[in-house]
Amino acid sequence: MTQTADVSDLVGFTPYNIVELPLSVSTADEYLTIHWDNGQSSDFHYLWLRDNCTCAECVSTLTREQMFEICDVPLDIKAKSATITNQNRLSVQWDFESHQSLYHPGWLKAHCYSEEAREQRKILPKIWDKQLISQQLPVHAFSKIMQQDADLLTWLRDLRDYGITLVTAVDTTGSALKSVAERIAFIRETNFGTLFEVKAKPNANSTAYTTLRLPLHTDLPTRELQPGLQFLHCLVNDASGGESILVDGFKIAEHMRQHHPDDFKALSTLSMSFYNKDKDSDYRFKGPALVTDSSGAVVEVRLANFLRGPLDIPADQVTSLYSAYRRFMQLTREARFQYFHRLNAGDLLVFDNRRVLHARNAFDLKQGERHLQGCYVDRDELLSRIRVLERSCKLGE
Ligand code: OGA
Ligand code: ZN
Ligand code: ZN
Image 1 (spheres, rainbow, N blue to C red):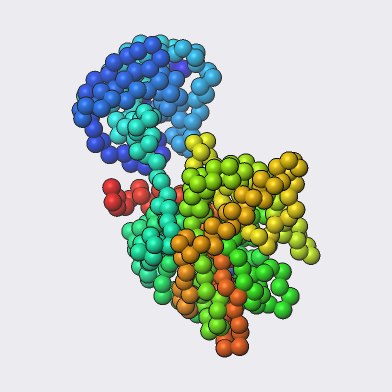
Image 2: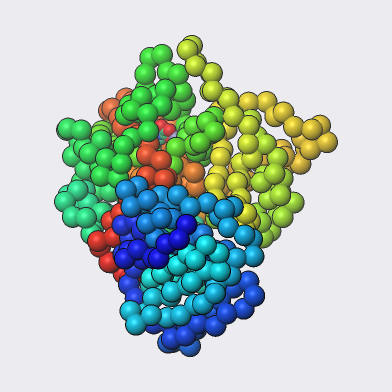
């Protein structure tokens, strides 16, 4: 593996602006330090740098995927020399196999893993209650998000951050819902179809397809991966009742963490059971109602009363879980957390189904019809679409 760095010091399609310039580099035993012209500094371990070499020998120029494997160099690999080039690149000559690497300063800064930099890079959800969302609900016009990539990006960022948006004036005659969803990516098909029709049906296989009240829930908690985004497009709403209620599950979870820590712990560690039984399908999933990531942040909520199965947990934990679940549901019923909206024909609610709980009141068809059309798109697709749009649209940066 004798190789000098290839001309390319970036792989992939994301551009990196050079905002700060590297002035100098100093070396320690396990890492080197870059001193930037704004007075900041960044430490990069030799192993990390060697792992991220972009030369044509380490990364395939065809697939942009790594060919180099970190287990092929010694654990104590070091820089024989490390300098800043005239083009402001970090150049490292390794003490193993005479390999040389070159690093783009914008890329290095964007990937600095100091505690402060990692904290700054976090995209935190904008958590809401009734008051906040009543003032800040992101509303986007159908024609704009369909035509302009910049408007599409603003909508998708709102969706990512608030977990809820309202799209207005969506055509109710053609296949507008499909077109909006496909502005993001492909639709996630389920046993309810690619597009599902929410209306009272004679042989309903879901409470959603009756006129009954639907308590606050996430859709398909019966699946290992709950659908990420849910779209509900109102085609007709002449019935009485049937109003929509939405609650930020992250808000309830944070409230519980703060005020009822034992209940928070029970809901985030003990598994609920969810069942969806039909003639030709039988979906079941066991998992906690609140999912936390490695830093303890709540990243997912999973709840639907009408899809619950019998608890299957150690006997000495049953009371704790019931107590925590009851507390959570009672909190979601408090008006201060509920956003209330009566859907009109042409309204399209899009929300993060793994975060925001939705409900509808019972309705009465004596005065007219009620018909919504729905579909799902996974969270990965949303985030990927945002990143691709951000390559060319530099909005708000
Ligand atoms: C659903 C649902 C809400 C409504 O179909 O999952 O929650 O307003 N519908 O009918
Ligand atoms: Zn290399
Ligand atoms: Zn639902």
